Image (cartoon, rainbow, N blue to C red):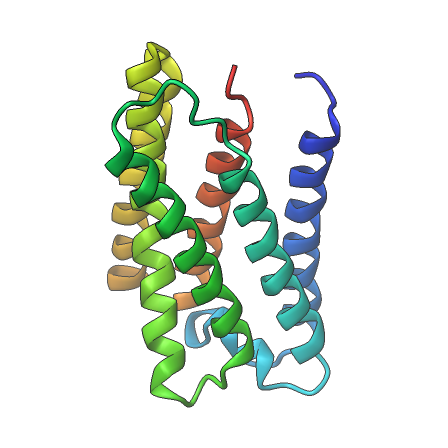
Length: 183
């Protein structure tokens, strides 16, 4: 892997997210199985680091999705779907960080984000399939499908939003790293 400024940005965002989770967990007395990531926004000690990390993550994801080169893609509906989905998912993630956990809007925007991101991974996989890069296409499609299925299974059987959200975010970092490799 070549160390480019984009790879460093992705890796820095990843470390920022992991550091935020570790910091917030160390300053929280609740069990991991009883909380969601957004619970960190309720605590005075962790709310600013949580919110800044989630908002920063939204902008990093949007940056890599929007800088993608769609040159040569004749299926304009696919380009529009990805661009629209990228903006909507990033706005939803920012609103998740800003809206209080007790508001029903918080859960609505969280659901929008968690549904759109795996779909975007699959759509980018389709773009790579059109370009003839079947390996990267297959990776992205599997990541999108796995992200959706594994996050739901974790939530359903482990009953921990925190674990499901962290696993979902790990998939998102892999997805962002892969769309950055667009050659």
